Length: 192
Image (tube, rainbow, N blue to C red; front, side, top):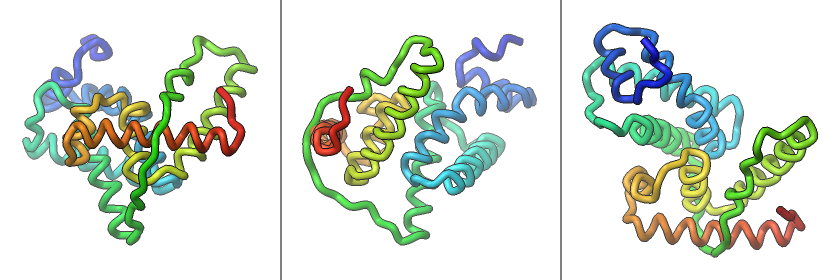
C-alpha cells in the first residue's frame, strides 16, 4: 500500500477497516500543522504538546466510535477538534480573548524560501520568531484568522465555519490583522 499518496479520507477508511498504519500516516501528515496552530494559539510549548496529544486522542476516539462523518474534509475536521480544545483550555484558564480592530498587508507571502542554506535558515528562523512575537500583539480573533489561513492553509469559508462567523467577518478580521501587523512591524522596525 502506498499510503503517502492516498487522500486523507481513503486513509480514514483504511484505518477504520483495521489498517493501523493508515492512522499513523494521517497523524504524521498533519502533526506539524496542528502543533503550529495550537502553539500559536496558546503560546506555550508544553501546553501545545499536551493539547496536540489530546487532539489526536480525541480524533482516534471519534474515528473508532464512528462519529467522523466529514467526507473529504479531514483536515478542517481535525483543525476544528484542535480549535475546540484550545477554546476549552482558555475557558479552564479563564483567559478570554481580547477584541480590537485594525488593517494590513500579507507579510506571509514572503515567508517561503526555496531550499535555504545554513545562513538562509538562520535568517528565516529569526524572521519567523519576530513574526510570532508580533502575532502575540494582535487581538485574539485576528491572530486566530492569520494562524488558520497561513499556518493551517485553510480557506476563508473553512475559517468562517470553524470559528462560527460568516465569511465576510472572517475576511474583515484578516484585513484588520494584516493592517495591524504592518503597523506593528513599522513600530518595531522590522523589514521584509
